[in-house]
Image (cartoon, rainbow, N blue to C red; front, side):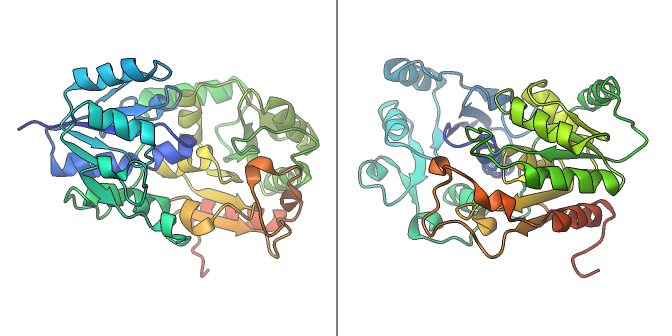
Length: 345
C-alpha cells in the first residue's frame, strides 16, 4: 500500500526545521513509494524544494483551524509525524482521522491524541542529546532504521553556477577562498543590544588569513551587518537582505568555510557539506544539542561564562557574552577546517 505521510513542523527557526529532514529520509528508506508532505512555515519550504525526502508542501499557514482541518482531510494522510508538536496540531491530526499519529509523550493536554508517543530526552532535562538524534526518535517509533542519516538540503548545479555569477558581479574573486561570516541569530537586533566588535575582529582576522569575507544576514539585520562589513574594511562585503533562501543556500554551498553564531546558515552549510565554525557564546545555546551536525565543523565557546545564571536569549537586554569569545580561536578554527586539519593536528 502506498502511504501518504504528513510531517508537521511549523515551530522554531529555519535551522530547527532543516534538522527534522532526517525523519523524512528515514521514512523514505522504510517506505520508498510513500508520498511525504511537509507542513512547514511557508518561508521554510524553499529548504526542501527539489528535495529527495519531501514530495510536496502543505501551504495552510494562517488559514484558520477549519481550513487547516479541511486541508488535512483532503490529504487523506495515513500517518502524521509531529516532531515539534502543539496541542492545536495534535487536535487537527486527530480530528482529521489520520490513523497513525506520532508525537511527544508527557504532554498532559494532548499526548493522548497520539497513537505513538515519543519520550523526548530534552523534556527530561537531557542537554547532551543532539537535536537530530532526538528528532530521529519519531522515525524509530514507526520502526524505521535511522543509522547514517544527516540533514538534507539539495541545491542544483544550475543554482550553484548562478550563485557564483552573483558573487562575481559583486567583485568576489573566484580564485581566492571565500568565507561567509554570519552576524545575526534570528533575534531582533539593535546596536545597543548586539555587540559587533567581536565579529569585526573575526572578520579582520579572516581577511588577514587570506579569506575574502562575505557577510550574510536578513533585511532586518542589514544595518548591523553593513556596519560590521564597513569596520572590517577591504576584503569584506555585505550581502545582507539581498538574497532569497534558495540563493543564500547556493551561495553558502560555494563557501570555503561558514562562520557565525548558532543560527540557520550554519545548519544549512553543514547540510551541504561545507565546513562550519560555530560560535556558541550565549549560555542558553546548548552546544551538544545544537552544534552543526557535521564532521567538518568546529565549535568555539565562551569561557568562563559571563551570562547571568538564568539566561533567556529572547529577553536579554545586552549580549555581553558576544564580547567575550576569542576571535583568534575562531579564525584558527576556520583555517583548520579549510585546510582539512583534524582536531589532533
